[in-house]
Image (cartoon, rainbow, N blue to C red; front, side, top):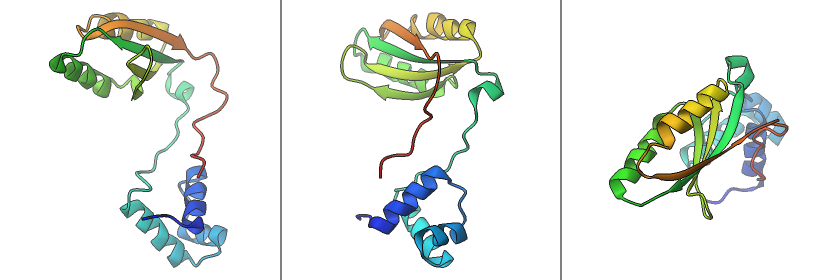
Length: 152
């Protein structure tokens, strides 16, 4: 299914404020609240909206270090890769992960309490893993643009 301009406007509005009521959406889109609510439900059912999340400032919950960690693989034994991916998926410090082209095979977004915790994750979990050849970390100095809405 393709989305029309009204659906795109609805998605843009929800990316800015996912808590908008059907009434507020209707006003924003020049629709009745019930029409706006049905459009939202349809977009959810068709997978255009995959969930709603609260943004929590990391510093407010004691996470003082954000880093991007590049992981280069040493080999591609399926069992070792599966084991590494399981670690990436289950470690709570790793909040996002991507498969990459180029020198690194994986890029991980990591939030830790402090540098000691980041070092422990790298030295005790990632580097000793048999599938890992190299790890490189880049510590975020300042986060001046939050994850922005998609350009719909």
